[in-house]
Length: 141
Image (cartoon, rainbow, N blue to C red; front, side, top):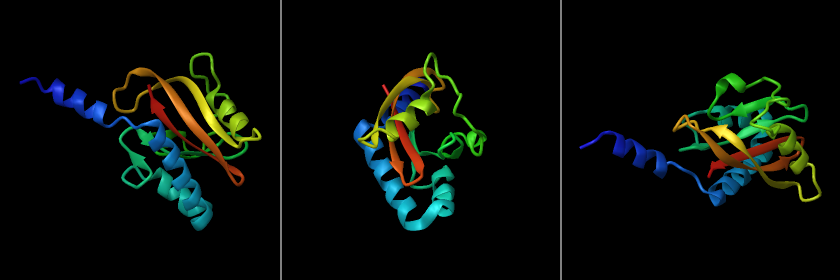
């Protein structure tokens, strides 16, 4: 029996859905409102916490594009990632633009390395403004 099959099945099972991404952003926004920035940043950055599930994780940004939390890549935390390019898209600029729109939320599509499969994949991230911060959770297509 091939050991690659269970890993592939496990990676597929770990894929989050659009509904799960939206729900995680809503939970993250409620957590931030209730507990404040410092506790929220710690919770969102905890790889074993409630805000990381399979390939779903919270990213929290300030208005300048500094990543305050990134549930899958601690190297991005406290870095200004506003100018980060993903293919021909500046996803962080798009996150902030969408979250500052009259609706205050929406989806951004771009290419991003999947943290589980390590392959470059199409990703859609749901973003929402939460006070002075921006929260997002993405799903791979």
